[in-house]
Image (tube, rainbow, N blue to C red; front, side, top):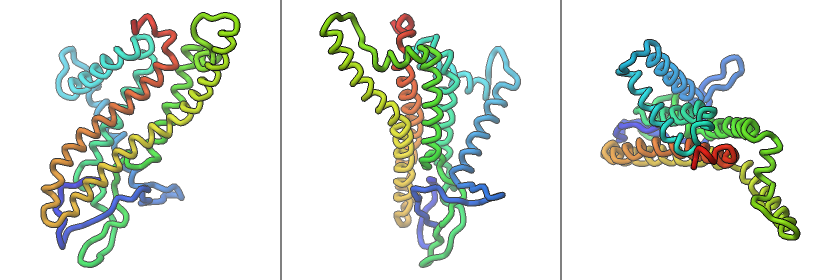
Length: 276
């Protein structure tokens, strides 16, 4: 959405709306500007991965070197948290989520995203009604979809590691050694705690999606507000632009770390040896 363009009497201006804008409807299928950016980002990531791995070399260089550095860095970072056994089963998701979210966040900062599209003249200004492109993660539909995909994967991983019975035992069964009345008390306490934990689990997709969406949407709205300052809007944007580059990286890392921690919490009985 951000753009390094000065806004004065002859410049374009626009406002970022909470909802993505429909830009086309081929064969009755609605396509929004955030969907278009999502497809572009996904295509860019796929093309880069294919280019980097088409001719693998013993001594990497160029795109292969960048991709290996990124993947190895992520693997080493997450291995200390999840352990080798669990990470080998789940790394495909965490690496894909991090790379996609980071690319989408930075793509939304390219000048022209959000400031090119269809509009009308109003008071000597050209007002954008339907921007052609919009930051993908500034649309809650995408962030919620990614969170729901993780939720499904989380259930599959938990059942694979613990079984259905082990998964419910991890949530509701009492921990530690106890006998008699204390045992009964612990059963009641851990069952109540498990019910609260179950409620929090169902709210995790909501918290994950709104945390990413809120930060990206707020950042792009801030850049748009800075750009509206007369004559020096392009200059005021500069420090905030670089701040949003950092925020885009941090939010990709936060989403990845939170999903990794949620996975560890339900699968940790089989990871004690690794984490120790």
